[in-house]
Length: 261
Image (tube, rainbow, N blue to C red):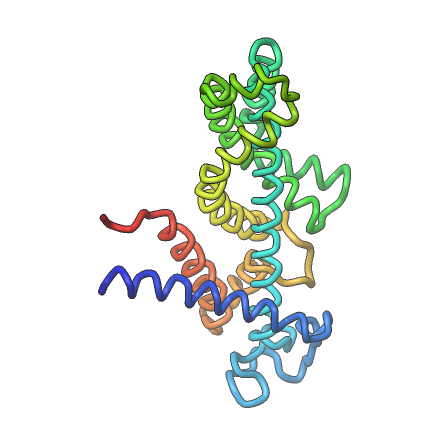
């Protein structure tokens, strides 16, 4: 019974977030940016269910749009990291030799780069934005996956069914597409549950440092930065994004656990 309740609350919370994000698509893009300086830090009421912020913007709309943006960055960075890690790891594990050594040295070099420096470099060259943030987060998130995929691919290449496919004259592309990648899918699915909460947390951390999505767009990190100077007088503006971030990370992390036998 406790386990069923545990799963129900996870999926209920994630489904609620998904519906809330879909609901924002029906609203105009500037809805969360509308300012009313005559209603700065207004308390919750009929006009603004969760109150307003320092510039009179609706906190509920800011939170909904921020949730959509933070989740989009997390999902985008996770998808990009899985694609990069799978591509390089599969190539290294399948080819072996010099290709494997070169690929793993590249991973070692990138491991040594601090995230903040990488984001600053990307922002200086490309500029801040959604794509840059996804790329910056994915640039470090895929490294461990590449090593794991390399090991699994090298093990699969020694299996009898892969050797038989090569002996029958199948091309390397066909062997990877038909025999290697399908056997990696369970691993990639489990690893996505590891990467996604990390990417969401990293987006909030970078936004908190001022390296995330530029204002006035809202994300969980931006909302935290805006709320901290006023948290004593208006704690709700800080508690709401913190609660959303905490529950989302808790739900995603708890999904990693296997059900009891």
